[in-house]
Length: 324
Ligand code: F6P
Image (cartoon, rainbow, N blue to C red):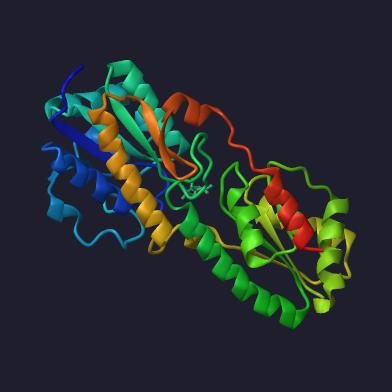
């Protein structure tokens, strides 16, 4: 097994609260092993362009509480090409980087997997995305913070929804997954969640709306995943089919992705960052660090990105029972 003395760390794809706490943990755990650490800027773009800097323990001081990513991030088109990946590997060789830690979502980890296979490079992935859509881990970095942000926004929307007797469709992120919509609906006491994992037809919509109205508050809040046209689409359908209702849409957008990470995300980021270095020490490669039943696990990256992560039926049941 090739011994490791230098690593690179990058964040890629959509930023997520907790990424900085994770970069901090990776940096300090690597230095603790006596290794050299390079912080690579703007994800794969920085690796291709040679935009990196040696990190010390001080480089990551006072970052645990900050949202976004101090390393910056990007969605790289160039890295999708063989030429782009060859350039990225040239940088790795030039700086004698023995292994790479990649913090990001599905697309970023797919890129990591490809680079690792093409150039026989040890890569460890860390799931950093508010979408919580990676298989093999109960949680991803940033998910809990985003969930809390959405919950607070829906609490505010409820004030105005009840005052005006309105039906609100609140659209949240999540890409192809409904974890944010489903769990924020439970946390905010909404009437329903429309998620890609479940089919929603107009009759179900009527049922959701009537639940809100029947509760004598004459208002209703439905959380909608961004996929399939999102909130606008459902609002239009309800306006057409039920003109008697006063319908509004609120698209939360990127405000869901910012902000200081919650304690849970900071702890998760710290644990996963340390685990990524321990994984390399143990000789692991091409695995994603996950957490299952509060224990650190290693998931082959290929599995984490390819298998769909299911939403527990129990969560759907809970919302359904509690919104009667
Ligand atoms: O993957 C994180 C995420 O925030 C998704 O929920 C969303 O669909 C997407 O990124 C938005 O990407 P961008 O910031 O590039 O518009």
